[in-house]
Image 1 (tube, rainbow, N blue to C red):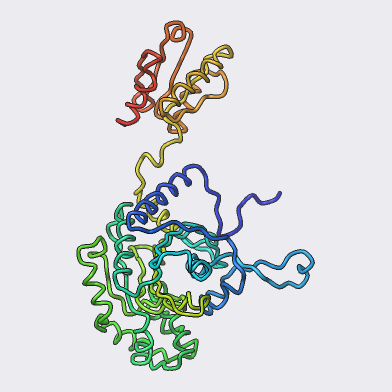
Image 2: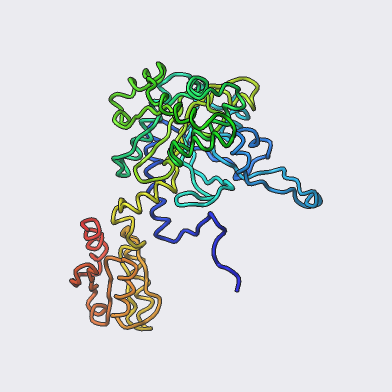
Length: 426
C-alpha cells in the first residue's frame, strides 16, 4: 500500500495546528505593523543564480534546486530553486524596485522557505519565517527597533526566559586570528561555520571539528575558546546596548563572543534568540550592508531579523502557552436536527445565529440528542441549540451549556444575543 505520510521534513496541518499558527502569525503581524513595517511577498522560487553564492559553503548545499523542464529536462541541469530564506529575495526586490520604494524601506514578510536539511526536532525542510528588514540606514536605531519588535512579539506570546545573544561580525576575524591562530580568510570562513555550532556540539565538539578540518590543533582550539570568553563587548555593540535601555529588549540582551551566524552575507551586528532546553534558536539576524549591492552594483545599508514560526510553536505547545480559546473548536454553537421535517428550520436558525455574529455548525442529519451532544463535545463546541416540537410551536430555543450541562430555554429572537453574551463571558 502506498505511504500516506508527507515527505520527510514536511507536515500536514490539521485544524488545531492551523489555529495555533494563525494565533502566532497574527501576533507577529500586529507587533511588526506597530513598529512601522510594511507587508511584502515574493515568489516561492527564484532564478538559481539569485540564490547561489549568498549563503556560504553550507548554505549552497541546502538549496532545493528545480530541474529544467520540457525539452531541457534530460540535461539534468537546474535553472530555478526554492527560496532558502526571505532576505536574498528582499535584496533582489530592492534592486528591482529601487525607484518605487521609500528612502528608508521597512518591510515584514511571513512566508515559507525550503532547505534540504536533515530533519530533527523543531527543524524542518519546509518552514515559515517571520522577517523584518530595514533598508537604507546605517544607524544603530535600526537594530534597536528590530530587537525591541522581536522582544515584544515573544513577551506578547508569553515568553519570559529568552535571551538575545549579540556579537559583531567584524570582530570575528580578529578573534580567530588572536585566539585560534587562524589567519587566512578562506580558513576563517570555514572556521566560522564550526564556531556557529558551539551551542549545539559544545566546546569539545568545536575543538574536534576544527582539528578535523585541519584549521588548528585541538589544544589551541580549547585554549582559544577559554581566552575569547573573557573578551570585552566591542564599542559599537556597547552603544547599541545603551540605546536598548527602556525598550522591550533591555533585559534580554546577552553578549556572546562566539556567536557567528553561518550565513556569509552578514557585515556588522549579529543577533540570535535562545531559550532554555531548545537545541537551536527561535530566530536571528544581523546587518548585511553588502548584499543588495550584489544585485544593484552599489552597497545599500540593510539589517534584518527573522523569527522561526515552527520552533516558536513547538516550544509554546510543549510548555502549554496557548490560550484555551486557541485550542477550542471552530464554532460557538451547534444547531441540532430534531427530525427530517425540522431540517429547514434548523438551517434557518443557523442563519439567524450567524447574522448575530456567531460561528455556527449544524449537525448534518437527524440523530439521538445524546449522540449530537457527544459530537459537539468532541469538537469543543461550547453551546448547543435545540429546537424540538415544543420549542418550535412556542417560538423558543433551548440552549445547552456543554461545560456545565445546564440548559436554558429562551425566546428565539433573543437566542443570538444570549449565546453571544455567554461566549464572551466564557
